Length: 292
Image 1 (cartoon, one colour):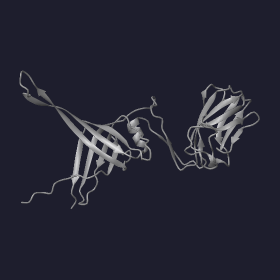
Image 2 (cartoon, one colour; image 1 turned 90 degrees about the horizontal axis):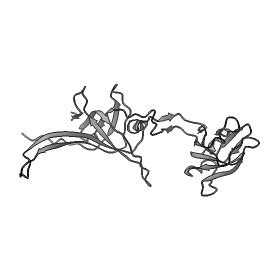
Image 3 (tube, helix red, strand yellow; image 1 turned 60 degrees about the horizontal axis):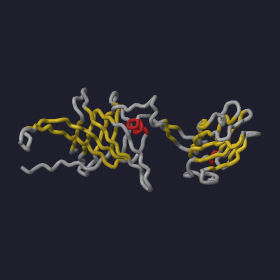
Image 4 (cartoon, helix red, strand yellow; image 1 turned 45 degrees about the vertical axis):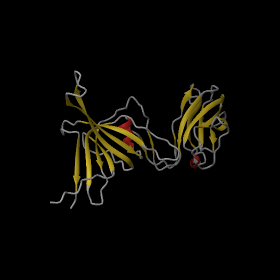
């Protein structure tokens, strides 16, 4: 009788985490670099006397971990690995400007005497440029505008920095009416009689016209939680049709690096603990099939 062909595994196809309570999937990671399951055990040796070798060895604990490496960032990876669920926003045909908030002092953004709102200028929405903006008061009714990065500064009407402090506009005046900066598509609506304290500042964020956007605050203590989850790891389907699937019943992961490397796609490597599931009486189930 001839020997059977060796059973081999090749590649990785997907990683699909699911909710333990319902079995519903969070989604699927497909842009995977690698994933490995490590079930490493320890032995506890009995040593004594002058013998340089153990007299006996007993079974110790087994540590079950999954090393997951991926290069895509769906919402659920922030939920599972960083503890806070993102907010996914629908398309913004006119872009968006967040509610401005005071950073230093309280005189710039005011519902009585100051800037009451920062909004996209009607007709100039195509000039909105992605980024974080800072307002700094330079006189009682005059301010300068700063932008945190020039990555999107050429969108619509070209913008430019005025100096190395990242200033993009100088001397915006709300003494008589609301101030408009057409280059950046922004309107600063004034209310009452502004009375800025020189040096006071405020911040806001801008999205250009878009088809979708996401934002998430990591470390929000009030809502932060790291749920346990199950996960299916599917190996790459071989040319022979063979398939391999690993179902880890009870997983836990805390932390996820976010790489920003020069000229390279971001890849995150996450260590996932695989824990015992008392209901299923196991840690992981391996299934292999050779279709006929």
